[in-house]
Amino acid sequence: MLIVDDSRVARLMLRSFISAMRPEWHIVEAEDGEKAIALTTTETPHYATLDYNMPGMNGMELAEILAASFPDLKMTLLTANIQEPVQQRAAALGIDFVAKPITEKSCAKIVELLGE
Image (cartoon, rainbow, N blue to C red; front, top):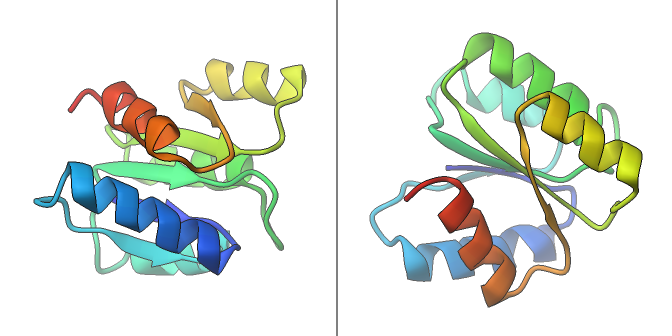
């Protein structure tokens, strides 16, 4: 699983909750889109959570790039940006949407949406 969020605290919380629910998952993290893309040269993610608001490219732009290289990658946009256009664009790209804050409940929803 690839976690992409510019907040270190958000990444740590997500890793903690997801690891508790799915200890068998290998989790890697990136703090921005460029680092996430670089990680995929050595890692092949099956699942990804993407923050929307990040420096450089936003989560939606990253999702489009990742989808081109990994068409079977299941992605969830995990963000505090809950505006309707963001949710609609995510849906149009086939990306699940989960609103922050990061809690055990929101992480359980991510795991459920990923079909695991």
